[in-house]
Length: 204
Image (cartoon, rainbow, N blue to C red; front, side):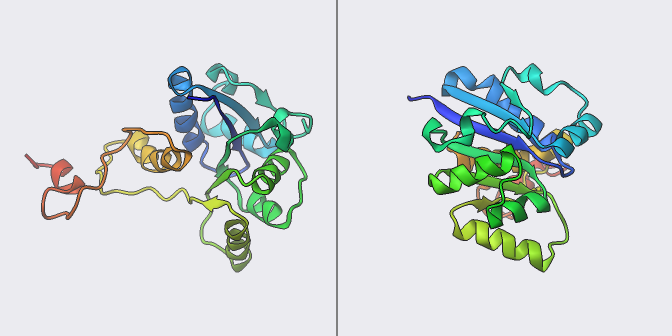
């Protein structure tokens, strides 16, 4: 297996715990999956991380970049990174990516992913969606990105916040191509032993 080079970006929207769950998985499995992970924050993303998480992101052992470090490896297509996840992804970040305005390292890295035809996942944390945002998400999708909103699911009957977060994190990992068992997978009708039926209170 060749080394997979991944950029994880945290922009200025509520939802930093989603980034935590993704980074925890990548950190635990980095050797097994041969991962080279790089982490970048927007200015507001770092502030929100402080409020919602409070830990030092450097503790994961990945290199951490500031928004103005435009000399970071993944700011160039020749560095050959494989994928980028922006989690959470703010509406403003989507808009700037859609118009090709690289005002910071996150925008530049996203631009690189699109031009190099690499995976770009935007875990959008916003509601409701304005027409401006819908059009921006359409543009990014047409350019090759994947909009993966932070919309938790409930058919696996998550028991706590971590399990709820994992209903989104597992889908992000799926689209990165990483097998995971963070959630109970959908296995059929709710009335014939599906996930909810198996995990509902009082279920055998």
